[in-house]
Image (tube, rainbow over all chains, first blue to last red; front, top):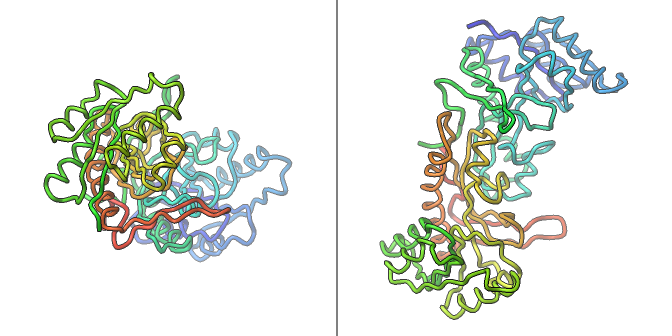
Length: 218
Length: 218
């Protein structure tokens, strides 16, 4: 199985990026982070990348005429760095076919909710306000929708009566770190297959030899 | 804490009713099933009730001019039997304020999905077709929407790669039986509080001294 050549897109603090960098450094994940790309100059994720000796680039979406032009620039940066799998780790922009077609079946996102519940921003707060008793996170292949792509793996956590958004966010985040590294490890090992959709079915993901759910008992 | 006086509404095979009857018979749930009401003559749940010595009634929705008139008949039957808590156990009709206002905060439903994902019919099949890796069930207070009421408790189960709808349905159903009996036990013990909504928040449920999630590890 080949080493994963990762391009990681970020917008914020980058704790999921850190989980990937730590797993690589520990020899727990057969991958190289080739480049970390942020759409914001002030993303702390850039600092995390520098500390790990990973090249960084800032591509400011406001400087482009439209989303496709922004995505074309991302593609150029990612390809130039030698990335073959794109990881969205807290990247707050919806991607267009310009990027998705350049990396077919090779763009993954992590979302802090048990999709299809609570897509979009602040999934944790949405869950808390709805009043669910089980929350979680999802790693999925990215399509042109908002958090609508084929699910690769999910992790569940309890919601407790005295949770505020910070407490629930922290509980989910610990699972995000583990789930994202798990999924990248499975992809590196060739255990993740994206089965194309048909006229009557969505594309779906089969994981071989591993259970695609975390946080469950039994 | 007072014995629960239950009216159970059914449309089908009634395995959740059976779980309640078994828990009552075993002394594990301080409740009496006062009446089982079906909107269908051929619901096997009616046979289960008869075997347990529980009175049954059939109220055929097709015989009523509208849903409110149907619900008014249900209210009459439930009140006449002495029910104070109404349990929807596979009851396939949406209720109107006529019934909900007659039993305020005292109508619960069990749904085979982790709401708000996959409301409506065939929640298990919806989950399978979407491709989630974690499925489950929800017990909630009923409001005038379809499976939109305040969540009392949820249980999670894995979705496995070789699951068909029957396999997933069976895995969820085992959790439904346990979750429904748990929730009724908590209600009997006064541990379930429905906190009213405000202008900016949904009503929500607080459970005292018990964890409102099942199926999770740790």
